Image 1 (cartoon, helix red, strand yellow):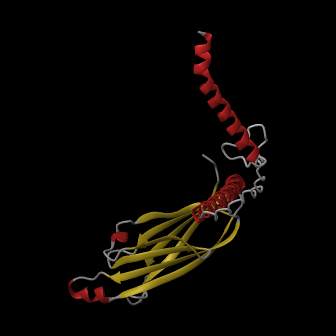
Image 2: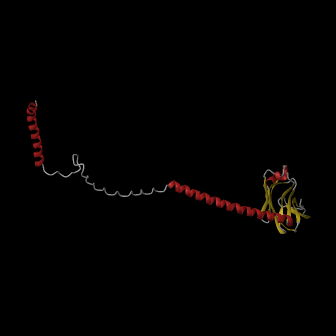
Image 3: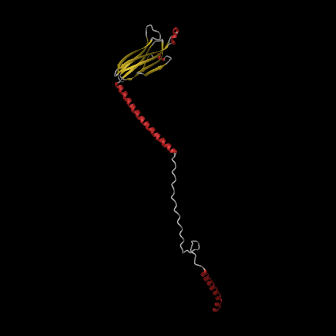
Length: 244
């Protein structure tokens, strides 16, 4: 029985030996193994070639600064202007307070140690004249002025035109009156007469006293014409000055 098996395995053994010998022949004919280039199928035992290092990247450059906003510059300029205006106003207020303080001191001092003056306007011209305007000047400054062509000044027969504190010493009062004739019936032609009466008066005010001057507009007697008849007189008196 063993002999039968041997007979059948003989040809199979011969074929195996032939295959092995063929493989050895192919291996001897092949050249030395090619160096591994890192591609697939290369020897895993060999280290892969090191790749060249990439050049260092340049540092990022800073972006240029944006131009200044013109609106912001205008706002800053306006703020500076407002600050200057506020400073100027503060200085003006300070100066005004100082001026008011000085004026207050002057008024108080003059009220205590100064003198006062009262001026009265008295109309005694009668019915033949209408007073159209009256002006009073004290030391060249106007203290009273009234113009009324309709003749309302005739109704004010006595009127206080000024009362104020004045320094002691010499002063000058000037009076300008504009008159118009007020004739009727056969004397109606007098209404066409309009003329100006001017007068000045120098007086002295004493320290700590009040001077009262009454300006009298009246007519003179005698043989005078209608235009020359009006005149101005002054009545002056001095009183002790008492504070209320």
